[in-house]
Each structure stands twice: as structure tokens, then as C-alpha cells.
Amino acid sequence: MPHLDVELSAGTIEYEDTGGDGPVAVLLHGVAMDGSLWRDVVAALRPDIRCVVPTLPLGGHRRPMRPDADLSVLGVARLVAEFLERLDLTDVTLAMNDWGGAQALVADGRAERIGKLVITSCEAFENYPPGLPGANLRASARVPGGLAAAFGLLKLAPMRRLPMTWGWMTKRPVPREVMDAWFRPLWTSPEIRRDLRKYVRGVPPVGELLHWADALRSFDRPALVAWAAEDRVMPPEHGLRLAGLLPRGQLVQIPDSYTLIPEDQPERLAELMRAFVLDGDVMDGSGGSGGSGGSAA
Image 1 (tube, rainbow, N blue to C red):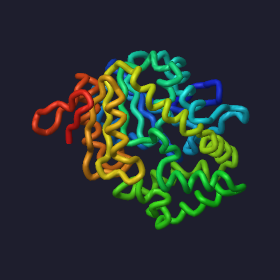
Image 2 (cartoon, one colour; image 1 turned 45 degrees about the horizontal axis):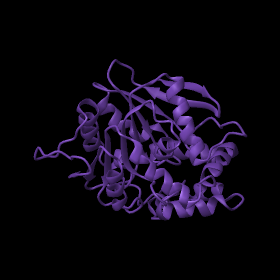
Image 3 (tube, rainbow, N blue to C red; image 1 turned 180 degrees about the horizontal axis):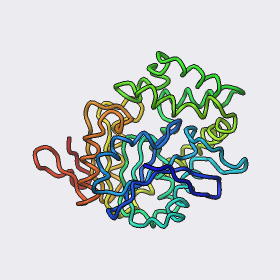
Image 4 (spheres, rainbow, N blue to C red; image 1 turned 45 degrees about the vertical axis):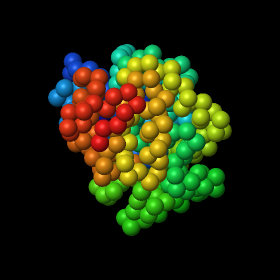
């Protein structure tokens, strides 16, 4: 896919777009990654679905944002809404993994361009930044030079498989060249580290986080919650709770995967997403439907 860019209020956002006349899916990644998280899912979906994959300013972006940009969780969620508007994308399927900011987007009343929602293992409720890796990231962001030191250690492959870094994010190691590309902006750019620090320190109080999740009750369009059954960073019960909040939510538990389902189980996730985007429903292996608030293995 060609690398494109669009100028938003916070700065230049890079994205990829498979094009075509199919329904549109916008795929969002988490902290210290870029859109390549979705590369295998996109490869499977692109014959039927137009995939638009922005790189959000969460540390894996190559172009620093403006110094005064609001890069709090809510600020980045508003950038997603602005991105959809600038590209004039409507009735999109908005999918996210790891990053939970789309909940803030709905709570902020900016979901009018979203026709369907796909929530895969991600931040929710009070779990921002998530789990042990999130606690490590938060501590690093509070110390001068902390992010440079923390990500500098990730130049060493064994450090990437520790529970406090990326070891609980995927069951199998992410290819080294992919992860190197994710981390390189943080290794080389003080401005990118500044942007990430603003995001990590821009998490609101727990009461606001819980409000965001509860606001999903107002999203009356189809929603798929696909959660890693063995997730050790995003509690599986959070997937069940989110599906219960969504009036038209379907829950699917994905086995043999940690948080980054597009890395661990891209074929299964692509299968589910194709069925959901094209038909509005998902089916399990025996032909049963996930149903509203239900589960399909």
C-alpha cells in the first residue's frame, strides 16, 4: 500500500489505504506501534473491504506533532474523528486493538461517521495504561529521560519478551524488523518521545474512564467485541463487560492469543471481521451466532 498523509489540527498523520469500492474499515493500533500491526489482517481483507490504516501519534509515528497538540487520550480520539472527517469517510467499521480511545470518541459525541464498531483486546474501564506494561510505561514517562532509557533497552531482543515490556502482548515474538520499525522513532526523536509522554500523562481520572465505557450504551449500531481468551494485560472479563454495555454487541473469544490478536491470530480475526463488516454478524465453527452479548469461540 502507498504511504499517504493528511494534515490535521495536531500535525501530519500518515496512513495507508487499500482503495476500492468495498465497505470501509478503519484500523487503529496502540502505543509504540504503527499501522503495520494490521498488515496480515489487511492482506486478508483487502479483496472485499477497503482498509484505511492511520498511524496515530502514540510513539510509533515518524512525524512529530505540533508542540501544542492535545495528545491526551481524548485528544487522540478527537484526532481520529477529525481524520474520518477530512477523508470524508462515512458508515465506517472502526476497529481498534490495544488502544481503547474509541470509547472516548463515542462518549465525546463524535461517532456519527461510525457504522460498526470492532473492539479487540484493548484498554477499558480503569485499565489505562494497561496492565504491567502500562505501569512500566507510566513510571518511565514520569522520570526525565525515562522513555529514552526504557525504549533503549528494547534494542536488545531478550528485553522484548519480559512481562513488563512486550512478553505478555503476544504469545509469539513479533518479527524483529517489524518491532524495530515500531520503536525507531522513539529511539531517534526527542519530539516523538515528547508526544508519547503527553499521551501517557494525559490519562484522565478513573471516574472519567468509567464514564467512557458506560457511554457505549448509547452506541446503537452493530458492535463486535473480539477478545483474546488468554490475555494477561487486558482482562478477558473486560471483553464480557463491554459486550454487555453495547446494545447490539457480539462477543467472540479468540484462543491461543495474547493482546495483539492481529499478530497472534490474524487469520481468525480477519475471518470474523469479514463476516461482521459484510453481513453484520459473526458465526462460530459450528454455525452458531455470537448473538447480542453472546459468545462464539
